[in-house]
Structures are given as C-alpha cells and as structure tokens.
Length: 128
Ligand SMILES: [Zn+2]
Image 1 (cartoon, rainbow, N blue to C red):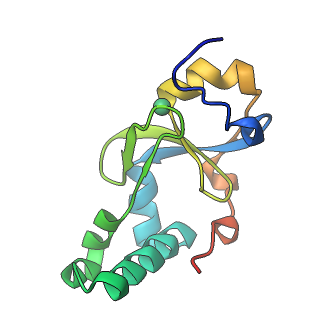
Image 2 (image 1 turned 30 degrees about the vertical axis):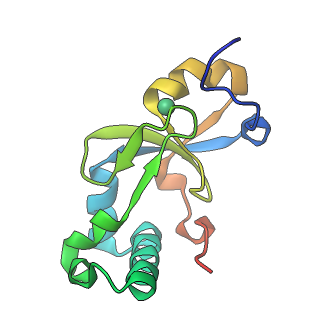
C-alpha cells in the first residue's frame, strides 16, 4: 500500500492495543473525576507555565484543557479536548490516531480496540 501517511516508522503499532476516546466527553469526565488524564494535562500545563512563564491564568479551572492537544500519528489531524471527535490512542497515550486513519489502516495493523473504561490512567506517560 502506497500512502503518504505511511512513513515506515510505524512498526511498533502492529497489533497494538488502542483505546477509543470520544471528545469532548472524555475530557468532561476527566475534569469531573480529576483522573489520570486530567493529571497528565495538569502536569503538562504546570511544566509549560514553569518553563515559559506564560499562560498562568489558564491553570485555573476548566481552562487548563487548552494546554493539551495531540496530532494524529499518520495524518497530523489535531485532537483537542473540546472538539467533537473520536480518536484512538495507545495505552501510554503517546500515539493518537484519528478515526479516518484508524479505519483506513486497521486491517493492515491488526489493532485491538478497547473501551476507554478499560484504560488505566496509571499507564499514561509520566512527565519528567
Ligand atoms: Zn489521521
């Protein structure tokens, strides 16, 4: 298959377990429960403010979500907490895949999809 989205650096995604994430509901729940995803966003936000001295006012309340975004690993489509969309991510949340790329490539990569209810926040990447 010849596709511009495939760059040959995707071997580790073969047979990967992916979690189906629906925004904005995923964020709304994270914010309500202050779960692992919320903490990941909060860590990133605090590190950013510490490093740059900017945007400290966004640390308050729900605005903190604006520190977070990811891109689809394949096509670079942007994922944000407040735009309605379905994305798929690896357990450590390092790789995000948009719904279109997921559908186009799921047969090639033999992905195993799990519900977000099976995602364990402690497996999210830790900030240094
Ligand atoms: Zn994509």
